[in-house]
Length: 271
Image (cartoon, rainbow, N blue to C red):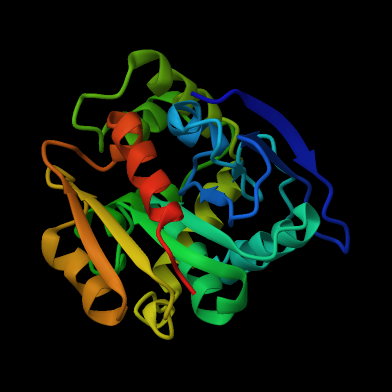
């Protein structure tokens, strides 16, 4: 198991400063870069980071507006998060990485994979929606989020964080996720979800030619097997792993298994 250290990336050029966690030793192979989802922070991946072997180098940034990252007034479309991700790779001196997107964090990750394949050695999508605007739960969430005001109600945040779990996330980790989500201003909740709902997510699946691993929990209350099949059909070099009994937060429910799967995927020969 590896130790986790916290850092802060000053990207410059008008971009927000982004906290990030790092684990593992420097090596010749491409590192893992783990991208959290809506209203999360790098802490969403803390159990996975700790479960990775020390030989695996991994980074987990917090996206703009989330956690302790800078929160600019605008710029919350998936392409904005994707541009930040490329800027972070530049800042860290990473030529190519295996991008790992958790939940909606897989959207900016796959945008980078499709637009900048020279920077991506592989793509892992952990409980990532193929589409979002077609899902009743997402549209119902928008009806609440669009009216949020500061300070955001804690009961809403707790329901948002705890609802998608299949009940196998450690209580302490869930509490950390709630505290991290409480850091988002209402406008970031609103504009980030607006961006996800108004973006043509099907288009973000086109042009991805890198090896791709799709991981899905079969008790996910948000994403169906058919939704995941849309990703598999759109991405030529992709395959599916199913976590039986896991919900939407599978990387919090099965961190040791996810760490093993990421390690094996990153070690697989690729061009």
